[in-house]
Length: 83
Image (cartoon, rainbow, N blue to C red):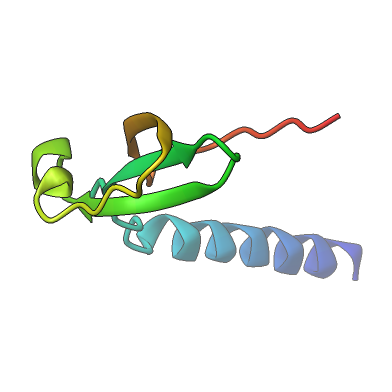
């Protein structure tokens, strides 16, 4: 009885592992760049976006009274620590 239970458990584990290994890997998303504009009163605007910084600048609309402008990879992982 114990041998059958052990054999069934091992077979289930091996089968699950085989299924997990045979699944296709998830494709990584294509990079997406954004032109982020911060105004003097602290508002954040997405002025433009594209496949690279140059295409993100094409057609970007920058608001008046901007303080900083940066081009960032919007698909990159962000680590926000707020205390």
